[in-house]
Structures are given as structure tokens and as C-alpha cells.
Amino acid sequence: MVSIVLIGAGNVATQLYKAFSKANGIVVKQWYGRHLDSIASYRNEVAVTDDISQLVTADVYIISVSDDAISTVSEQLPFNDRLVVHTSGSVGIHDLNMKNRRGVFYPLQTFNKASEMSFVDVPICIEALQKEDEDLLKSLANTLGSKSYKLNTTQRRVLHLAAVYVNNFTNQLYRVAHEITESEGVDFEILKPLILETASKIQHMSPYMAQTGPAKRNDKKTIKKHLKMLENEHHKAIYELMTSSIQKTHGR
Image 1 (cartoon, helix red, strand yellow):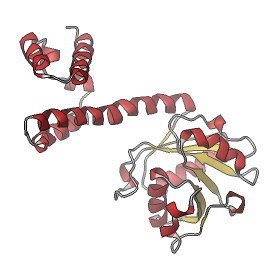
Image 2 (cartoon, helix red, strand yellow; image 1 turned 90 degrees about the vertical axis):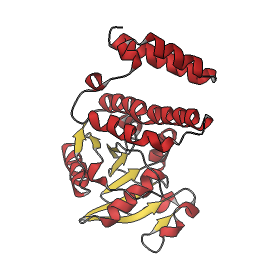
Image 3 (cartoon, one colour; image 1 turned 180 degrees about the vertical axis):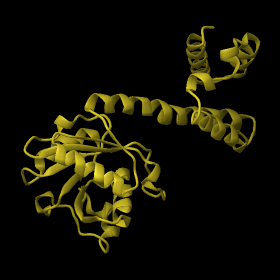
Image 4 (tube, rainbow, N blue to C red; image 1 turned 180 degrees about the horizontal axis):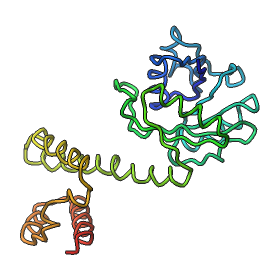
């Protein structure tokens, strides 16, 4: 049985708690939050605390706080020589205080406290300075049903950067499309099958091969019409930038 103390009360920590609490072979012994109100609703399921000096003994301490706070929180831990990991994609393993054994347990997914989700399809990137700690983190991921990947800090940061493109930037494009359809009373729902098909295609072909549209075809008349339709200068700039990027990629 692997014992865990969760440190943090945000989206990732909450979803990790839900997953760990359902998994066989894992016990969450304690959950720390800087503001107890944020995790008070779980006090009948797990020991909660807002006093970092009162953390109990466990096999793994998972720091799941904002990137800027990881180093400070790791310094505040009231013990030495225990396995402490963070869940960030962009923070290095050496940002954790060296008084403890250090590692990373980074689940690559977008998280929301309220959503119901399974970790079966969530890849977890692990890193540790000691082989036995790496094995423990891999076992932890396997217990959740997740596939684990051993990545160093540089590789993980590159992956996090790529994730911003495929998740955050893509979602912003959805938002722009939503504004465009709303402007003429068109139901955004009509676009959802296209969104799903676009995501589905890259499961079996490269994004390069999956590209379609007027920019790839160098359809100048359609591109000109689209730009004329866009009254929002910000939307127009995005269209021009994306068109230029596609054309450079495909030699247009």
C-alpha cells in the first residue's frame, strides 16, 4: 500500500485525490490546503489540514500548487529525506528543495475540479533522481491505469510548450469561432462534428498530412473573402497569421 500526502487544493490536486481514493493499493493519508475551506468538504473522507508543520509520514508527498509556489512550499516542508514530487510541466526537478528526495509526477491533461474523469487516458510523465523513486512513481501511475513516460526536465518543458499549442491555443480558436458564429446567429453546435473529426484524424495520420483548407490550397479568392468578412481586427490578425503559417509549412 502506497501512502500519499497531497499538498495543494486546485484542479490537479482535486482530481488526483478523486483518482487515488478510488484506486487499489493507494491511500491518501492527508490533504493539505493553505485555505482549509477549499478542501473542507472532504474532511469526512480524508484528514485535512492547513498547517504544513503537521504533515504526517507518507511514502510520497505530491506538491500540486501554482508553479511559482512549488519551490517555496518544498522549502517549508518540516522533514528531510522523504520523496517529494511536483505535478508541473514547466518546473524543473531541481526547483524542489534538496533536503528531500525529488521527483516529478506530471499528468498531461486539462483539469477541472468539478468534472468527472478517468486517468486511464491520462499520460503521466515521471522523473526522479533515484531509481527506486522512479520505480515507485511508475507504479503509482500504473495503479491509476495511466501510461507513464520517463522524461527529463528539458523534455517535459518542451512537451508542456506543445501542450499549450494543442490545448490552450486551440481552445482560444474555438472561442474566436464561437464569436464569429454568434455574430450572425449561427449555432456553434454545427461545428462540433468537424472539431471531433479533426481531432480524430491525427490519431492515425500526422498533423502535416491531415491539413486541409484554403490556406493549404492557396485559394486566394476564398482567403480574401474571409478577411473581408472579419470586422474584428484581432480575429483578422489571427486568420492572417495562421494562413501564413500553413502556407509556409506547405510551401505555398
